[in-house]
Length: 548
Image 1: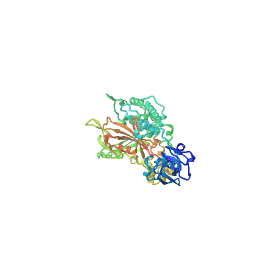
Image 2: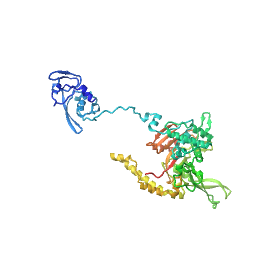
Image 3: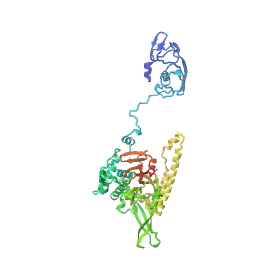
Image 4: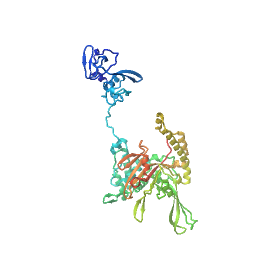
């Protein structure tokens, strides 16, 4: 309703306008008289109020619009639509856009106490071309396309253990960069590395589900145990074993690309061999010094045995006293073992102490959820709840030499983290509009503070490519097992990626990918028992020095 309304429904005969000083009244269904003739109409006419064939109950209404005040006379025997049309002549607000706090346009005005009008002049909004859809009603494919979620992997019959492993390792961008530069090899381990390269490249190109059939066939050729079958097909396998085989192949075949080789100012004294140039050795392998001391009083003079070894994972021991990840790690730092004593020529008890001398950029931690029950001859799952942190500090497990190198940077980073948390808390307490806009902005870090932290990095650690220089780790992936049996159940990957926009965590359940919250990750500690997902492997990335 607009200009055309008046062209079609308002009488254009100027003879009918007897007194222009009187208000213009739009009436419906009246016989209207003028001085010379009678005009019959079932639509509105512009008339003189005194010429009606019946007396109208008139109410004067005051209208305030855009700072101006108007007075109009309203016939209360007419419906609301007539009043809206009168208001249109003054305000330009079309009747469809007027809000008069009146139910229906056919309501008689004499039954109402007239209130303020609300509305906006201008065209009505157009109906959306596409129908609005809600997340709750979308299919998995529609949800992935709308949220631009990454691709999932097809389950080829009890291959969830492999799919979950691949999605967790996919969270390492340096691994993908190294794979992109891999040229291939003719042996089986080289074929597996090449197949992993092609798989990740395909996942990066699409949001549709990808079938890893070629990779699983190559994996079964490299490790025939993954090809074991029963009368129903391929049997379920251990995701930890799959993780170990893949990383082992990468360790022997995948070298660092040129850019990563130049990421440090140089190389450490231990990086001279070609083995140290591999991606796994640099970014996923740590070193620890193991000391074995005989605790038996029968041979107090026996010297301790000290040796250095590499590790690609740490173990979280779980028993009745384990409530947190740090408890399980401490249990492995010092433990008792029985071995042959060269001094006594008999089995004796030793105390084994381990200290870390090098921290990798990516730290893998396995929760010891499964163990072998000898008397029942079955593998049993430990359901105990074990909490794990999003920020992990492992400096207490390091040698004194490494700890002294890490502490200055770690202390400064923790101070910076605390200051940022306080800033975030203040922004969340915003009480007005301007403050609420500020709270959505990412806190800026003083470049001078960053420069100060960078100067605290130990020169030897700075040269060690792929090493952690802070002693702090951030959780980036969790591989979980759901079920009460070690021989069955279901594996799922939960991955944090910095390039996924507003969705902080993603759940990879084979071909189904969905966004989850931080609270969902906290529920993976085993509190839900065997009927819910329980953390089996945790992958941590080094917390580096932030950029300006």
